[in-house]
Length: 521
Ligand code: FES
Image (cartoon, rainbow, N blue to C red; front, side):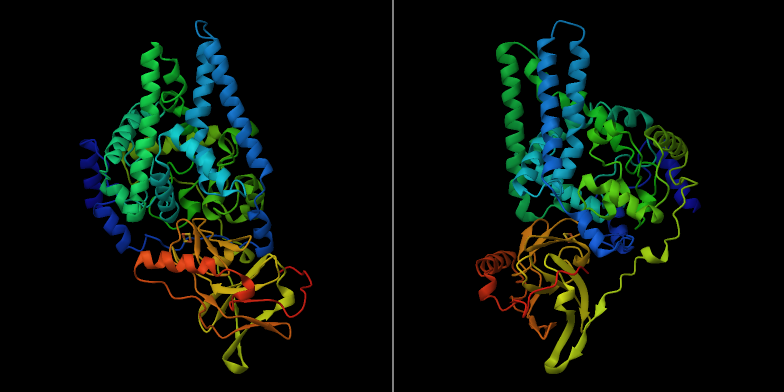
């Protein structure tokens, strides 16, 4: 309205954002009041068996990509140092810096989601190294990224909005050097190292994780201090050119790719098709950027590993806006829209059509309604229809459930809604005896309901199950204690659940009466 426009113009003249992008201001309250926080987002329906295949992780591809990245870093770093004194040291350092301060970002992202390899340790190791390269506190940024996925480009909620409206071209260009960002990040890290965690960070990091934030800040600053000391001791800037400074002089590559994700698109919408961009890129860019150019697909299905995003794109492209045909075209769109938003921050991009979703890909996912049967039981379907290593969603007595068959053949029935952010777990992934949430990749042990990967904290309900006469049934009797109000007690309960995870001794896990036929659902 005219008032908004006047406020925007005043803000523009005063050189400040038209809206309050902080996480602790009026916009944050407004977002919550308008139902924009932790809301349900559109995502097209994908056949469950196909989605399970797309979600499967392998070690080979990601380990090879990570090894190649490290090899390139070492190769260019060594060549640059050996070339000092010659003009070609400059492009060699530039390439090293881009791999360090630029290509670390997609590694940080993919390994941070925990989807790149099957090994948590490998995922975490690469995540920590990349976090240091980017000077991002690993725990702080993990929680920041959970929030980014919950409330993507919601003003006052998303800590990862790159360019507030109205955009300032000068600041936008300065981002490419990180000359302003790195000193700010170091100052914040120093405050955190002294235990002074800011209100923004406290808004998305749970209290129990704050000590880790402090110690990680101390560790990262300690490493940087050691590098500075080495540089001073040997009277050479080379150690700093290899560790620390590349976060500044190599950042341009991260920003070059990163702005294509959301910039110039809508704020405050609950549909990634309206606020996120997929861009077709060449194979070299896709290696450097680890397929993050399929960004709408990633936001809709964060459980799909980066190397399966092209296949996921092929699967759901009919439900998505047309991708930008090239990086150049994406930039043309972004720069044009930023130019318009300089004068009118409320301007929105025109010509981006969100297709009408084909009926087969509509969001409404039919869950089987379990029929009540004798003895207060609910029939959850034929055991033979559920192959080992698969799951399905069901609703019994109004309660959403997941019915899963482990690789061992045992059947488990657990709550169907994630205790962290209300996502439907049947749309997630089975990983061994765990179920992974499709929203933030948190995990629960299916046999005990215990949380076993961040950010989930509260156990899932696990229900009794029996397989008789080839039918899976439950009385919906909860087998594990309901969550304790006190988080420390919840921790103890989760630990106790884990200790009792022996399927033979656990009444919540039923062995099938006869062997499964292996048919997929
Ligand atoms: Fe966040 Fe499930 S909704 S992990």
